[in-house]
Amino acid sequence: MIPCQRHLFDIPDDIAYLNCAYIGAIPNSVRDIGLVGAARKSQPWHIHPPDFFTDAEAGRELFARLVNASPEDIAVIPAASYGTATAARNLPVTAGQRILVLEDQFPSNVYPWRELARARDAAILTVPRPADDNWTAAILSVMDERVAIAALPHIHWTDGGLIDLVAVGERCRAVGAALVVDGTQSVGALPFDVQAIQPDFLAVATYKWLLGPYGLGYLYVAPKWQNSEPIEHNWIDRKGSENFAGLVAYQDDFQPGARRFDVGERGNIHLLPMANAAVSQLLDWGVAEIQETLQARTERMAERAADLGIQCLPPEGRAGHYLGFRFPGGVPEGLADRLAAAQVYVSVRGATAMRVTPHLWVNDADEDRFFEVLEAALRA
Ligand SMILES: Cc1ncc(COP(=O)(O)O)c(C=O)c1O
Image 1 (cartoon, rainbow, N blue to C red):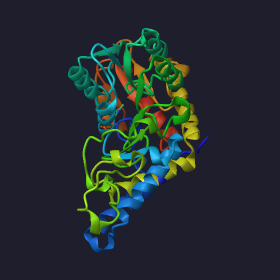
Image 2 (cartoon, rainbow, N blue to C red; image 1 turned 45 degrees about the vertical axis):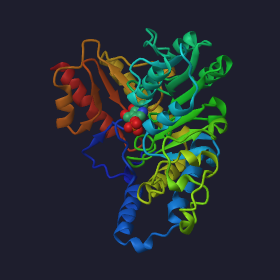
Image 3 (cartoon, rainbow, N blue to C red; image 1 turned 135 degrees about the vertical axis):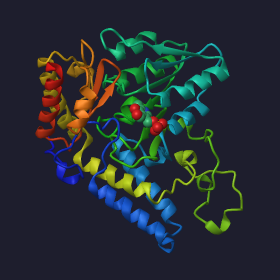
């Protein structure tokens, strides 16, 4: 168990921030590195050509360690949607085949597939939310040879519903389907093992559970897809781009591995050093340890909620860093306002659900204040 890490964050005592799934807080050390990055830009003579490469290479290495991949398989991207677009650009789908997504899946992992399905005369197969909340069984029950691509998360972003991606990955390989994973709501807080799951593509934005900046992400690309097409063509991804004097000796060849999928201006001197410090911190804590620690918190919170008649997924069916509260009689009137007035931050979504997503900065006082507001709203 990791002790509360509040001292590393700029979160005052009177703020209860239980909304990491919305935007993760960056540690103070990461913020300070961001300030240094901004200051460097005001004195650009301190920025040297190798700087456009070294931070990205360090980022690949750190993210690869986080998901048990090789740095060669990692591309630098600006958003999860850029990663799913890259996958959609390259995965084969023919007329009549199916692309599988989940009901209410996050749009960055839906829109590219709708476009692809339209372009190829293929179909979107949406797995409805199962009555027993067992997504894995529901996915496996429809995964047959007609499915060309399974585009999935590791957990459902609304309530943390967990998917057994090792089992789904096995089935994908058995039926000849590609597996594309959006890990934005899980990687960094829930262990992800590329060797065990064997995705074709894995896209992750850094601004939630990687505790990094907005506007940056990583894309794992399985070696068998690394000769395929990037969605844009920029100078830095081409062979020999380190030689600034030779940039107009135009090259048909790319930098090796997954680097051809890097976004333009990927040598981001502002965001990459921040992301690198954040991922280093996660590796120091250990992802399994983060998950175990957050799970202890959410299990306790789920029990306290159950005493108030509020349901959430059972521990075996959800990720430990996530809670989706279901109010049988609807979200109490005025709850969102009461929470805001008490500086308690969660996501109230729709009329019946609330998403509660703590990180290591959350302490017992935050938890107690959340329940005080909730109980008062239920009594009112
Ligand atoms: C599951 C999931 N994926 C991706 C994102 C962000 O997507 P993008 O980086 O394309 O803006 C979010 C944001 O809420 C999300 O919940």
